[in-house]
Length: 149
Image (tube, rainbow, N blue to C red; front, side):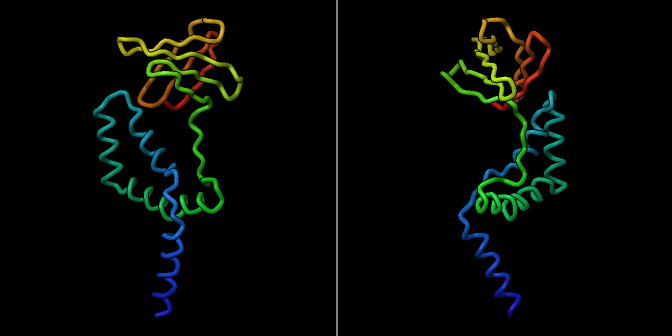
C-alpha cells in the first residue's frame, strides 16, 4: 500500500507541474531524420525510429524528466544548439539573419521560383542553401553559418 501511495504522490507531483516543455530531445530526433536529401531515406529512418522505440523513449524521457526539470529550473538540461544565428522575419518572403558569433546581419529573400538569395550588409551575395528547416550560409570568406528556420 505504501508503494502505491508513494507512486501516486510522485505521479501527481510530475503531472501537477503543468509543464509541456520544449521537447528538445524529440525535436533533435525529428531534425535528424528529416535532413536527408532523399525522401526514401527520410522515410526509412522515420520507420526505424518508430519500430525501434526511439521516438517513444525520447518522448518518455522528455515528458517525465527533461520537461519537468525545465519547468522547475527554467532551463532544459538538454540544450541542443543547432544554430548560431537568429532569424527575424520581415515579411512573407524576406528575413534578416544575424550571426550570434560575429554580429553580421544578412538579408534572406525567397524568390518567386522558390530559391533563396542572400546578401550581407554591404549588398554582397552570400550563398544560401535551405534543406528542410536548416539554413546554411556560406560567406565570401568561406565561413559557414547555420540557422533553423
